Amino acid sequence: MFHYSKLSSIFAFGIFIVLYGCKLESEEIKTFEINFVNPISVSTPVFIDIEPSLGGDLVLIKKTDGLITEITAQRFKDRLWFIVEPNDGPLTRPIYTIKNRPGTEIEYKNLSATKKNGNLQLSLDNNPVLQYKYEINYPPDGIDSIYKKSGYIHPILTPNGDTLSRVNPPDHYHHYGLWGPWTHTRIDTMRVDFWNLGEGQGTVLFKKFETTTSGPNFSSFNAVQEHLDFKTKDEPQIALNENLNVTLWNLYRTDRFMFDYTTTFNSPLENGILFEAYRYGGGIGMRFNERWQKDNCTVLTSEGKNRLEADGSNARWAIISGESNDGKGTNGILFMSHPENRMHPEPMRVWPMDANGGRGDMFFEFCPIRHEEWKIEPKKDYKLKYRMVVFDGILTSDDAEAYWQVFANPPQIRIVSK
Image (tube, rainbow, N blue to C red; front, side, top):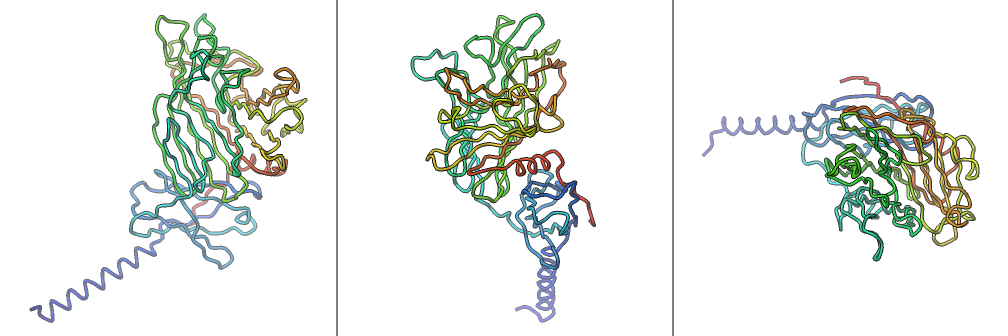
């Protein structure tokens, strides 16, 4: 039998646990606000640095004009990510507070990254929207296997399910959805082409995944790719090591989603490698679906140029759009180049209206070596950053400029208290 004093002690200890638990549930870790370079009219991802040692489920609270709401946040490593909406701009100036809620982290189903049949498939609300091919894809039967490849993105689908990308078209079997091999390169005295696979000089292949993560706000992967030189040595050698990061963002819209494509690369070669100036190669290129031809596909750049004028010009962004599958609407992709990229505003390759026997098929590329060569020094990192918005319906030039502005000048965090 317990004595009354022991029972009192246990009861008091229980109260202490409850009170301490309540204290933890309301414990404020950090309070901050967001400084905007310009008012925003589109949603954009923002992060705040957090201490890696923090445990439990972190909660983000927003206070605006006396209204308190919990907003969706996603933790990855030492950052907490959330989506800022247009009404969260400088006119309302909400205050954000991070709190620690002990317990198991909540599992969200908004986005996912799933390996299936040699592809890493990124899905939004259970709908596949893009996938990365990590196993070798072979060309159609009867076509030389020299065109086999891994390490590219296909398909890219709109929110309504229209496929926008294309691989192994009969006119260019080396075209692989969304990808970016370098074309005219020089290794010592040898020219090596990693783009035109039929030449047998080089290729770019998947090596391994370093990270994959998914949550309510984004799904992301880091893939190591090797640029293999078949020409200059008796055995293939690695000319470039590349880390490709692709991040799919949830804009919480039914007609749009966004993804980032960031490539970081270096050369292990003693003398590095030279990217010669050429009209296509490197950067980020995309072969569009066979439906889009000269009569149902348009181009609009940040400088106001259309498809007839865009090729060889420079731009901060470009909207490529065309007729939807059902013929009743339009869809497309907004491509954005980051101001830190080499040759920004960035040169473009846009196929002419009479491409491929007069059909006017669509190919688009941001091409940083279009007008000037680029010497890649040995063992030095280089980076190119791009962002795309995939949409159904219409995306206006004002929308495009707004998305580019928050990509180029993201909102900044200002700590109010710790």
